[in-house]
Structure formats: structure tokens, C-alpha cells
Image (tube, rainbow, N blue to C red; front, side, top):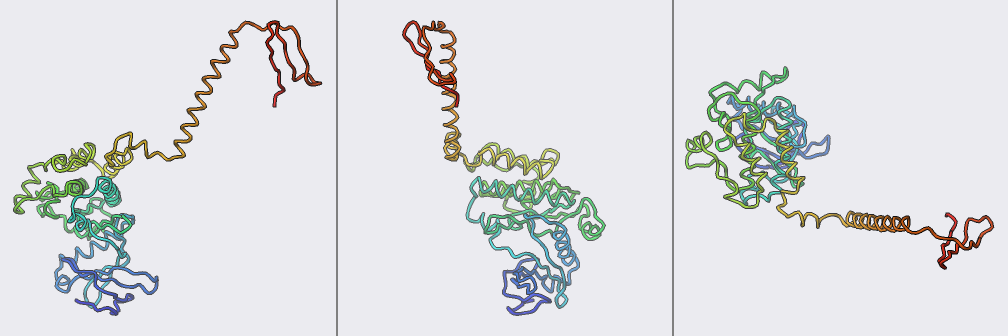
Amino acid sequence: MQLAPGTQLDDYEILGSLGAGGMGEVYRALDPVLKREVAIKILPSFGSQNSDRMRRFEQEAQTAASLNHPNILAIYRFGFYQGAPYLVSELLVGETLRQQLERGPLPVRKAIDYGVQIAHGIAAAHDKGIVHRDLKPENLFVGKDGRVKILDFGLAKLIQPQPETAATMTHATEPGVMMGTQGYMAPEQVRGIDVDYRADIFSFGAVLYEMLAGARAFQRATSADTMAAILHEDPPAISRITQTAPPGLQRVVHRCLEKNPEQRFQSASDLAFALEALSDSGISSGVSPTATAARVPRRARVWTTALAAIVALAAVAFFVIAKLTRAVPMRISNYTQLTQDGHAGIIQGLDGSRLYLLPAT
């Protein structure tokens, strides 16, 4: 179904095409009521006649709509136009992570930033009992503002049934059926056995590996070889491909890619915390502690210098006072009063020394 600019799709006006994919055609449209532009994805006519694709399309709408998180695509509406289902979502301006990776690996700091955002989005889905099962660079969108959005919940699985969505979302989780994208599926997905949220953590590890190394963790000549590598081989160490990734970050990646789910991070929240700790420590920049200190704000350096001076003066005062207290007591020969109240005066010692007494201010 091709929609020309100006076409009215229910309450929306089509402005132009944004592209087409296996799961539908995407258009830029205007919401005249809220005065904002949106994206509308329409399932092709042949897809509308396929019950399985129809169910997945509807599942994507229901799943994403149940999630409210800045790192997950916002869904506004689901409906039908001339018998074809359509999905209205926020309009994203930017590019997919796959498009970025086609230009090469990402800087470490940017890879960590993206990783933290993705992990937070996954954690939000997992908190709702939703496993994405198809996390890959094509399903991660990077806006011009640097915000990462997780897309396409068409293969999502519900592991904690909720009354309003359980009937739809558990339909595609039969054991023995392999769901996902080769090269990013967890070993348990390749085997077609039941999976949980830790499958997403494996897929996340494959994506993070690719962001750092500029190469896929598991990519062989054939699909069968790729799946065999996921099951039985470890990817080349990131340190063999790039020297920019710090050891701590490499350990995070390889822990995500453990074959045994029990040895991976046990929650996306823990994964996000580990990445944030690396970012906060300054490891991601790859600079020395001296260089890090050089970036301390000027005001902080001024206060540090002032504090050091105060401490030094206090030390000098301490030693002076200590010396005075150990000195021989002054033998007074004369006292000259300078004020009527006697608060100021001059003490004359026998040895000719003088001590001036000044009133307190």
C-alpha cells in the first residue's frame, strides 16, 4: 500500500515516506489536533493476510505502549486503514545504530553512553516482565540529541503474565521455536529452549562488543556456522582488535556473552550500574590521572590553593605560639597606659623589650 502526501489516514495527514522494511512501510504524518509530527507504520497488504505477522504487529504495539521510558519508542495509537493495521509512534530524527556502525567502531565514551541508555531501557522492559528477544543495531535508534531508543517489540515475550496482554504476548513462545536474529541470539535462543531476561543481556553484549570492536562478535560464512559459534566459541578478545577499550569494560562485555545464563549479569539494572561506574571513574576517556586532574574546574583549584595556604599559616602560627609559651617570662619594669579604660598600653621589660597591648576589635 503506497500512500501519497496529503492522504488522510483517519485523523492524520500523510506528509511523505520515511522508508519500508519487512514489517511495514513507515510514513511521516501530521497530527492536526496536537500539532505535532508523528511516524506511522503500516503493515503491507500481504502481511495483513498472514495471521502470524498480523499478531506480531499488534503485539509490538501493545508491548511498546505498555512501556513508558525515555529509551523506548513511544506508541500513540493502533488502528486499521482500509483493512491494513497501522501503528502511530513518536517521530525519531537521527539514524539507527547499524548506520553508525557502518562507519566504524564508536569511541569508548560514546559506546558506554549508548550502553547505559540501552541497559536502562531493557531494565524498564524487564521490570514489566517483557523480554525483547531481538536486540540488535537495527532495532536501536540514535536521535540527533544522542538519545537511544529501543525499537521493534515484535518478538517480545512476556515472562510475568499481565491480564491485559498475556493472551497476545505468550502465543509466540512455544519451546522448540527459534526466535531472534542470527549473530545476536543467546545460546538458549539458538537451541529453541525457553528464555528469560538474560537472553537480552547476551544480545546486549553482542551489540556492545560490536560498538567497541567495529566487528560482530559472532559472524561466520553461513548461518549454521554462526549459530555454532554462539553455542561453542568465544569471540576474539576486544584487546586484540582495539587498544582503546579499558580492561574493565572488556570484562563487562565478556560477562554479558557468557554461554551459561547463570554466569551473566543477572539483571539489566546491575549491567547499567557497572557501565555507569566505568564512566564515572573516567576509565572511558583513556586518560591518565594527571590529565584528569588537569580538567578540574578553575574555581575548585583556587579553593584548593587557598585551603593549602590557610593550613600552612596555621602551622606557622602554632609553632610561633609554642615558642613563645616556652620563652622565659618577661620581667616588667614599667607599664604605660594608652587609653583611659586601660585596655591598651605598653609594657616595658627590664631588658628594654616592649610588648604592646591593643584593645580587642
